[in-house]
Length: 181
Image (cartoon, rainbow, N blue to C red):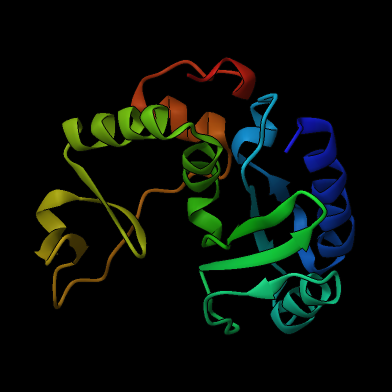
């Protein structure tokens, strides 16, 4: 799908979803944010306000997006699909925890090779990505192919209120989304 068409869908999504989200915490990421001429899906990173998760998801469903994964009030990731004249358009919705906003927005802006380099950088610094956010590796254990907080510890993940905070933590300059390759 052409960027201009995908932006129309994205703008409608953010217009409808933003009233149910924390201030400035409803942003389109992925190839649209990077201004790629061709778009294959839409990625929305949002933090619904306390008590507004049900209304947030209902607003997306009212636009004709059909869930492909289960939706709950605690969902961190949901895939939806909308039938369009151009075919099926996937929508991936990511709802990070407040302290992990900057990291998740950066990763979901991509592209995937760029995100992998960011992850390699935090691993080099001795951290692991877990369901609660970035934790120093010594406070984690591997469970299958995922990392999780070690038992009997109070996880205190790193805090990234903005992408700039996240890039600074990694020791990298912030890069405009359109220049991320």
